[in-house]
Amino acid sequence: MKVSVILGHPYSKSFNHAIAETVVTTLQKNGHKVYFHDLYAEKFNPLVTASDFAGQSLEEVVQKHQAEIKEAEGIVIVHPNWWGQPPAILKGWVDRVLWNNVAYQFDEADNGGGVPKGLLKAKSALVFNTSNTPAEREETVFGDPLESIWKKCIFDFCGVKEVYRMMFRVIADSTDAERKQWLNEVAAIVSRYYPEESTD
Image (cartoon, rainbow, N blue to C red; front, side, top):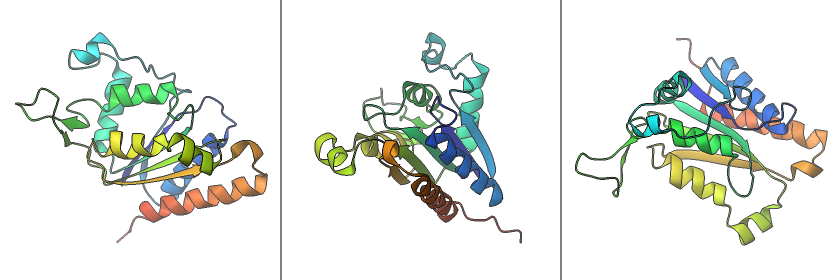
């Protein structure tokens, strides 16, 4: 299986990087082909260009990301909760990569106001987030916006119906033992959705 893994965090020693490393290692151990992108390390340009709106980005890196996401049979997103949103570089990745006729498509007579057909072949997606906001405050005060962003606004729109999201918190107060346990949970979740490939 081909699985696309996208990381959006600027600090190489962050827990997000540890999560992404665990995801990639587990997928590879299970025999899957991994498309891994650390957006900050790769200096991905998040700004939508006029060429994007003209129908095709002139940037080869964007074309590469689009080709990979179209081929991916599974998707894993890793990022922190910043202001109830993904970091800007990841939002820009969504804007530029999950493009019309790449991730979704409107009927010919639809000017964009209707409901599109999702084009992604991935049957499932995992989203791992980190936060310093306690769960009760996140849900009662803010309404957990990342839940809606990834499940309803992005993946459902693009045809990915099975989405599992997990938030690890509170990162600032976490111990090494807690982080180790969380990484074990990440590995278990990844293996549940993308189990070891059969060699038969």
